Structure formats: C-alpha cells, structure tokens
Length: 332
Image 1 (tube, rainbow, N blue to C red):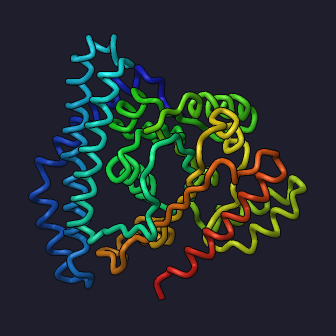
Image 2 (image 1 turned 90 degrees about the horizontal axis):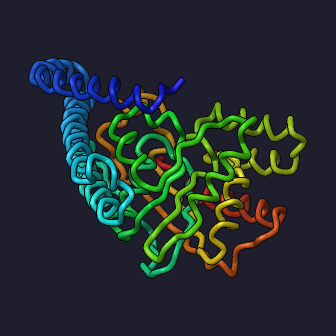
C-alpha cells in the first residue's frame, strides 16, 4: 500500500536521497565488478552499460529532487506552486530532465527512436491514447510530446509510480492524475479523468493508456478471461486475435472525450520494447540492435464516434491496426 503523501515527503524522499548518494560513493566498485562480470559473459559489455545507465539515472534523480526543492522555495515555500510561472518552470525542468535521460539511454543502450510518418505539428488540444509497451514506453512518449512537439502533457498514471520520489514530487505538482484499479471506486477515477481532460489549451496534450497495464502474455490472457467472465464474448474474440496488445478499456476514453469535445485524438504505438518485460529480458537485449519504431496517428474529432457502442468498436478497430503494425516490425 502506498504511504500517505506526508510520509513519502518526510521519510521516503530523504531516504532516497541518502540511498542515491551512497550508490554514487560505491559506483567505482560497482563498475569494477561489472567489468569483471563482462569479461566472462558475452554481450558487448552489457553489465557495464546497465551500471552506466543506472548511475546516470541516480545522478539525474538527485539533480531532480534538488531542483524540486529549489522550485518549492521559489514558489514561496509551496504557496504559489500552481501559478503559471511556477508551472512553466516545472515543465521546462521536466523537458530538460527527459532530454538528459534520453541522452544517457542512447549512450548506454544504443536506444534510438524512429517515428514513422510523423504528423505535422499544429495547434489545438489533443487526447493521446497510447498502448503500453513495457519499461520506458511512458518516458519515450512523454519525451516526444515535451521535446519533439513542445506540448504540456496531462498524464493519467498508475498510483504505484509514486514510489519513485522524483515522479511523486514533480508530477503531483503538475496537472496529472495517479489512479488505482479498484472496481469499487471506478466512478471516482472516471470522474478524475474527465476533470483532467477538461479545459485543454492549444499546447496541451491529455495522455491516457487505455489498456490500463503493461502488456505481458499473462496479463493478456487474464484480460481476455475477464471479458468472457463479464459476458463480452464478441470483444474477447477480437482480443484473442491481437497478439501484442491488451484489449482497450473505453470508460476513461469516453470520459476524456466528453470533457474535451473539441480535441483531436492521437493514437500511439511503439515497437521493440514490448518483449522487454522482466529484468532478465532487458539485460539480454542490451545493447539494442534495432531502433524503437513509433507511429502517431492524429484523427480529427469529426471522425471520432461519440456513442458508446460505436466508440468501443472504433477502439478495437484501431487496436487491431496497432497490433498489426507492431507485428510487422517485430525483430526476426
């Protein structure tokens, strides 16, 4: 269970700072051990690469927490955190931080992103619906929106991400929502999604992952079984034909569309990272042999259905298209 916010701020955040500092102090020893391991394990120095990335991330974590403390002071010790000036400062730092994480990942893992047929940037609010593609997918998407398209994302995320101190502090200061999958409180989260999507500006981007969880074969089977248990056999049959995605959930999508009726819809797919689930799988893939392929489809609001049945069918149509796109780009 996630601790209360005051516990995370007073206990977990200082503990994370101390742990990060301790790891940096012993990092030369860790690098030495990693180098010895790689002398006996084939893989193009993958252990050293992983340690290099983690060390860079730890440094950026410390920089981020220090920046959050400075911004908190500049905001009158938290009084003006919601002011436009302070919000802009947080978005600027978030953009800088993601650029640095991306740079470290490029050096360590040879991680590159290739966007196929990128849509031409143009003003207007957008609702971004992305499939989950494993670790790093969210950072890649948010980085593209912030850096490539200069958008200000409003993100719906799982509450467990607040265990990461920098995410907890920084993202809770910006218009984002952390939710949990609890059927008994589903209406509260649906309402929260609608509130987050309301009032989007020309440079804003609402971000939601309709699948709800990262894709794994086991989660896919459970999701299909759940559809059958609820009597949605038609949707379960369609979901069984999709090998690389989970069946999309429509309640959050509809809540966002009702709250932002003038917003275009952007569908997003990523490949390559979908088969990186466990730490073991990640470790065996370092460095990456292929670029991460990404595809963004921008659909005008006039082409998006509004009734529930039509929207569900439309979502499944698009998820089948995304599944086919991913399958065509799977490494041999």
